[in-house]
Length: 277
Image (cartoon, rainbow, N blue to C red):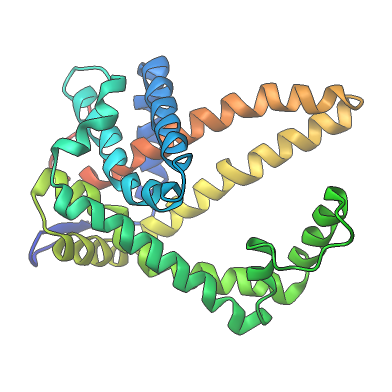
């Protein structure tokens, strides 16, 4: 690994560290499963409550996401030092640097919006039409609407547009990956946190790529395989119920691990001298 010094120093790791971040995060999760699941539920319940606010909910929730994510960072930091995650930690970010954390939500909204609009360059706006309800609908039948959406999403140029949109969103995601942790743990300002996170993610592109591939494998492929196997082995409609019973806990465990990995990867890149407990 190579130590890089510029502004906030960080380390460049080899590719295999990407999957190691997830392994270490899962190891942390299994030590306090119930506490992490409770924290995860508190996170999403809070977001749903904010989204339910009339008129402003759809804008407030994305803005507050980086603030709420600090709760997972605080919980992971606490656990490494012998403590235990607690539900109350989800609001820890409100006692941190809000002036830097809240604008991260704006950066996310703007960056993802630009990436979505950019898909129109490839598919002429078909994907945007599906996402925002402008796609043609047959009658008022929900099944017809779903069929139309499936038809549009299966079109090669729409799938190419989705890939293009993901590439356009990549710089935003890289800049935001470790930005909350840099704000909280290293008192970085908004611009410094975004710039440092982007540079560190770019320098660690091999580890980031391995991390992304592993996330896709366990977050998308494995649940799809489980659902397909259940559908093949059990008759309808019981197969849908069994699939939900199996997949939903798996997804909860995976998402909790993913949140923990933000801290584990941050620590490994910016504080490699700190050995995990």
